[in-house]
Length: 289
Length: 282
Image (cartoon, rainbow over all chains, first blue to last red; front, top):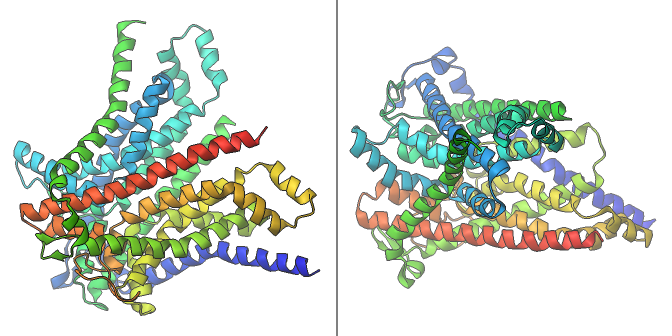
């Protein structure tokens, strides 16, 4: 009897620990939302306002949001155009020993701290762009390249997994019909791995948009953000604006509320992208099953 | 095989190589530019302005922060994982827990930093301190600890549990002396990867723990604390001199080294673990 009671208590303790994640997420949402309500209450002036200039109490985030998407989508395009072919090579054509070299390098790339990668970008990429194309050097293009490096590993590993998940029978049937390995890969395997590859891209996009330090170091962050018209212009994104200004925003001022509201917007964008990723993966799994 | 196929395959091969090349360039560049400042003084002295001294308080600060973060995230994460893997019935609450673990993992680190700032620093009154920074980092890596531990626990063969239960052990006795004993290398692997993630995290620490340039060690858990990533950030954005930049490179080398040590030990442990587990199936 005593043992049974102790067992019950232990189970309860584990259950309560497991609830901690729910609690933390609720607290995060509640506190961030509470801090941002005064700014969100500005309504369209906040979401569609064209001018962000805290000293004049102007808090329009539209240019920042547009810049965030421009930087995120461009980085993803670069990561996809390198990452998808790379994952095809690793899953289908690479000899085992080469895969054993490339794969750990890809995983290692995820782990370079973003601040270190950003510093590298500032010292190398920015200087390179300044010398070859002119301008400040700190610009959208530099942001694209740094974020592409950070997104690439995610795209490669998830795409490779989904290519490998295509049932062997499909491939064998195609080869038996006389198709070459390459034809089989392009016509049979890739269409079946489509949803996994798509999921890797959306997830990569979420990572790119939520990334802070690396992108902050290379995109310039002009005092007054605007909607960029060239890839050589400096911009401001959601994350970089928060980090740079939170240090001197007076606590309790509209400026501070507006920065927390940027956090809410960022949170919502990333959450939507994550939900889409999950939906795409579920659909893909159902399709193959 | 015709020429067209060869060209396509060549193209695929080149894209696969790009990751390797980028990695080598980044690490190579940082090592070449930073190795010059690495010395015993750099490791054991305190910083003075941007250009002088060493990074001793930064190294110790980073280690303290990670230790606090683990103190929070590991017990909670492993307990959550035990619940999910061993006890959880297949119901709404369980799927809810899983959903929120995923959700927490997806929250951008800067948002966790903002939360740490309003909740830990202001609301609970911990101030900009080691405690705030460690806890905020803990929130960040909690979902990774849960995931890694759950996977490790689930990988323990069913027969182990059945053998133990058949011998008359209770469920908790089985979990404690059989399941966790077999799963712990997997759990430690997950923790090592979590450390690698936490030690390089900048945004969270910048908002909650300190400016990175502190030249003293924290006397208590409520003191601000320096850390390597924030030190790199400060030097890179405000240093302006080549002496400051090479110090930032030196600190970057330390960060990369710490990360490498963590991932290589994780890789080593994982391989041994897989061998043991596949041996166990016989």
